[in-house]
Length: 485
Length: 129
Image 1 (cartoon, chains in turn yellow, brown):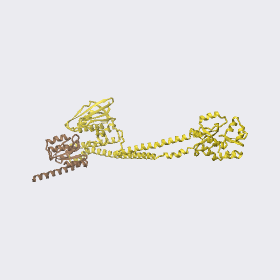
Image 2 (cartoon, chains in turn blue, brown; image 1 turned 90 degrees about the horizontal axis):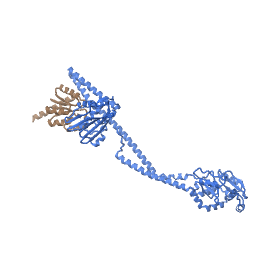
Image 3 (cartoon, one colour; image 1 turned 30 degrees about the vertical axis):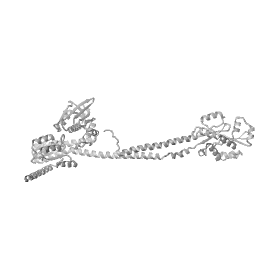
Image 4 (cartoon, chains in turn purple, orange; image 1 turned 45 degrees about the vertical axis):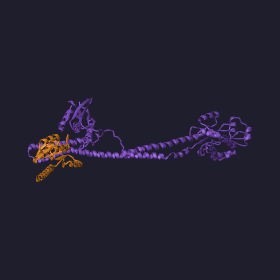
């Protein structure tokens, strides 16, 4: 069988291509919204980037410094103590009482002499706990009296993203002049600062670390802020544009159309099969009618005629007719089951001669049988007889006046080619394509069954058929069969 | 009554010939259309009984050619299957008598008798004038 070509009906065809076109267009539009989303995400990322924050801190340095001074939280004393360059005079001038200096892990509280008075627990807990605790133990400066929200608001104002600051986070930042640093910078910082200066683990990309310095640009406090990604997700809705729905809709319509078309095809195929079956039935019945009529005639004759010799002839005729019926039914049963039938050595020349001998050939047609003697093929004889008969019959019918049918053979390796050439009316190009379709016929009386069956039978016998034809000039039918030894 | 019988199936043709002869008709039987035409030219037949589908030249073609030779020739067509549409076409051509295989022999005989009587009527009418 030739490969099945999926052809949509013309009307659906246009609709189908239109849908494909629309799907592509809508998809491209939708894609643009994705690209926009990606771009926006990049932009958002950039907003949160260290450059951006550094810029922000840089711009607000003066204001922040002022804020820090106002708040009285300053790392200078801490730095002085840590480095051993304690300036007691400076201390006295600036602070009367207690001085809180806070780094990430510990809150250090120094007395006015600059001695470490108190070191808090690690600040790895909620400020709800730490602040009241500190306030309770010592009367610290007013900064530590600030409530948690105020502190967080200050932190948030630094990065201008109040909603993005994790409210219940592990870390709480307090004092703020700073810049964001990355891992590389942190390594440098680690070298700059003393060993006991804790540095936040920066493995997690989502966290930003604000590296805080005092006004002298010395590192004091790290503030770790978790940016929630909520804002980005919140905005996702705006990227789901109508184009997405249209794309999905078009795809759905396409699938619907294809499924419908496939269903229609299956139905058509089934109907075709039914018609095919019906036609086969018709063909068989047609084949059976002659022997049946013969038998019926014989019955009449047997009833009427008493002559023994004649009666014997009629009985013989009946027997032959019955055999014909059995043979026909048997052949079709085999074909319907796809059975090959027994392959045997068949002398092609003998078979062709037998067929020509039985066929009524018009006197204006000459048949030139140039088959080699001893052209043996391996095939089922009955099926081969049907094949040859059909091809020769077609040739005979294509010749309207003074024609020649030439039968030749070629042998190559294990194959035998038998070529039936005629100079009859030929086959139109458009018909040539459909010639093997069952029930395709250009004849008024034919059933269009012949060549499709010939092809089928040849396939059963490991053979093939090729037809070369030119309208008005003639036809060459080439069948290839297995060579018999 | 001289009948020409044409059928490419020998067994069928042969038995039908025997039957017709049994009924007292004079029958000539040939297997193909070309032989039929030759026979037709040589003899004067009253009726032709023919298969429609035959290899080479079909019954209708033969009938057309016979009509050229003998204008008032009558024919009964025998075929395995004739579609209604085709029957109509044939009727338009003036072909009225069909028998489908496997036929009842009595049907053919009655058709022959029918034709003979119409022939007889025609002859009678002709005599009147």
